[in-house]
Amino acid sequence: MHIDYKNALVTGAAGFIGFHLSKRLLDEGIRVFGLDNLNDYYDPLLKQDRLEILKKYPDFSLHRVDLADADQLASLFQNNTIDVVVNLAAQAGVRYSLTNPQAYVNSNLVGFVNLLECCRHHQVKHLVFASSSSVYGANTNMPFSVHHNVDHPVSLYAASKKSNELMAHTYSHLFGLPCTGLRFFTVYGPWGRPDMALYLFTKAILEDKPIDVFNHGKMKRDFTYIDDIIEGVVRVMKNVPDPNPNWTGDAPDPGTSYVKYKIYNIGNNQPVELIDFIRAIETALGKTAKKNFMDIQPGDVPATYANVDDLINDVGFKPNTSIEEGIGRFVEWYRSYYK
Image 1 (cartoon, rainbow, N blue to C red):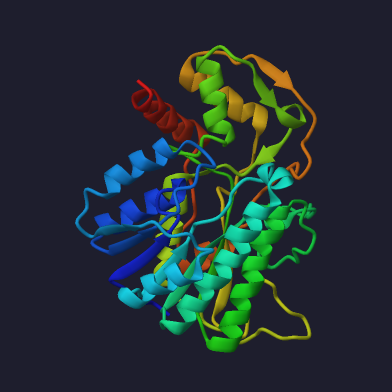
Image 2 (image 1 turned 120 degrees about the horizontal axis):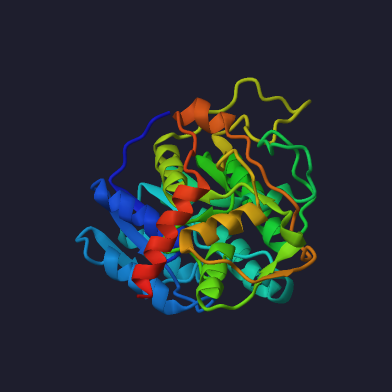
């Protein structure tokens, strides 16, 4: 079912994906309520600089709210008309979850329940939420499909994202709240997160410092350019999921449901070896990296690869930006941002 909307709440609006989505929606004439707690998981200056761009739009308002604060969140919904919600606020990162599990519980579990409650009580037309390719965990059947079972996470981050999918389904079942979960595959591009490989590698190479190459460069990732992610999100926002008439409890399909609930992968559908990704960065920078080859880290998976058939069939879109093009654009941004 196709919906039009005038007002969107984007949580994590100062974040990498949240910023790009907010800007795109504002450019399309949508009013955006941006929610962010501006935590210091990484340099808050980068978040402030993203917000400076968004604040130039008269239809943007920033709400400095933590999702874990139920009262603050409730008053945001009470005082504003919100048609559609895109939840991008989360404690991100697989490795960080090994040392700071509590941050994931507060943001990704407590915060998500609070958001579901607000959506339920304020007749939100569609909740779109970020899940992650990490939910595939120990799965090795490639490409990863939303119709595969995903019950073997290998990090708390992944488990928290899988939990979001389960909670959302419950609210669709109990309260008829239309929910769509998006499993993003390794997102990269301008204004990206400083804890991500592309950022770390670019910075280190320019500073003549060695880079840590995990799994000896043999890791494969379905690197997905930010503009492709945003295009997918924008199309999905307008596309409220219909119940699947063929769904049966005898052979339950994890990717769809008998209620208004759906899961999509958004990935490039073209996995790249880490060592090739690094080569593309070296080419864009015109500089060779000093490489420190290391074993795979706890919580990491050796490969990710997205099946995007459902995304193509339902919203007519397939990510297609090559890593050469995407990395080129990132390096261009990085050089101008850091002079």
